[in-house]
Amino acid sequence: MYKIKTYNAISEKGLARFPASNYQVDPDLTDADAILLRSHKLDVSAIDDGLRAVARAGAGTNNVPVDACTDAGVIVFNTPGANANAVKELVLCGLLLASRGIIPGIEFASTQTEIIDEGELSKLMEQEKKRFKGSEISGKTLGVIGLGAIGSLVAEMAIDLGMKVQGYDPALSVEAAWRLPSKVKRKENIAALVASSDFISLHLPVLDSTRGLINAEVFSAMRKGACLVNFARDEIVDSKALLAALEEGKLGKYVSDFPRPELMGRDDVISMPHIGASTNEAEENCAIMAADQLMDFLENGNIKNSVNFPNLFLDRSSDAASCTRLAICNRNVPKMLGQILSVLADQNINVLDMLNKSRNDVAYNLIDLESQPAEDALAAIAQIEDVIKVTLL
Image (tube, one colour):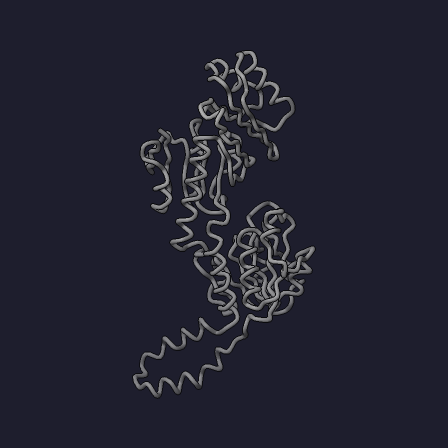
C-alpha cells in the first residue's frame, strides 16, 4: 500500500486517479511515500528517510525545499503545461485591460447609481466615453520572453489576433521550438526584443539566472510607453527598477499577477491576486498530471517532469514483467555504476535491463533484475560512497 500525504485542496479528479486498493491518500499521514501539494510551503522537516517523492500540482516549485530533497534522494515533480491555457487566457485579458479603458470605464459606470432616468444615463455615458478610449492590440508587437509551454501558446494566440510576435529564450528546447509558430521572430537578446515591442510578456521560472532579470538596463532599452505583462513570477522583475521606470514614464503600464505594496493605487499598474492558474480546468489538469507521475514513479521508478533528477523511462518488457526493479539515486561521480553492478555480480544476480542518466551533480539508475537481491546486497549498495537512496520496486 502506497501512502500519499496531501496539502491544500487537491482536485478530486486528481485524487481519484489513485486506486483505493493500492493507495492511501490522506492529509494526516505521518509516514508517507510521497507528498502531493499545490502552494503549501513545505518545511525541510517533512523530508524523512521514507519519503520518495514530492509532486507539485503546478509549474513553480519555489515552495518546495528542492536542494534538501535532492540531498535526500527525493524526486521533486512539477506539472509544466497543465495550467498553460489558463495563464494564456489571462495574458490576453491583461493585454486588453492595459490597452483599453475597461477598468476605469466599469468603475465610472457602476458609480452612477443615483441616476434613475434611462435617457439621462445614456446621455451621460455618451458624453463621458471618450475618457476611456484606448487602442487595439491588432497590429502591435508582442515580445515574449520564455517560449516554453505557456509562452508558445501566448505567441500563437497573439498571432491569431493580428499581432506581430517576437520571442527570446536562451534555453529553448527542440521540443519547444517545434511547438513555436513559424511567424514568431527570434531575437538574440532581451534588449533587442524590448526595444521593438509594444507589449512584453514574461514566461520564465525563477532561477538564479532569471531573478531580477528585468532590471534597470532592460527598462532603459524599452520602447517608451511599452506595457510589461508578468504572469510568471514576481522575482523576475527588479522592484526598484520597475518603480523607477513607471515614475519616469519609460514604462507605460505594468500588468501583474503579483501585487506589491509600493504599486497599489497607481493608474499605470493593474494587479491581480495570483489567479493565473486559478481555473477549475487548470487545477484538475495539474492534479491529474501530478498523480499520474507519482504513480508511475512509485510503481515503476520512472521519472517525468522532475526539477531535480533526470527524466528517465524504462519500459517493463514482457520478459521483465515479473522481475525485480532497483531504483538508485547517487552523486554523479565516476565508477558508480561499476560498483553497483559488482555488488549484484557477487550475488550472482543477472541484470535483464538497465538505464542510467545524470543531471548536474546527481544521477539516477533503473536496473531490472532476474531475481530479488538479498537484504545484505541492498545494504552493500546503500553503503557505497555517494549512493543517496536505494529502493526495491
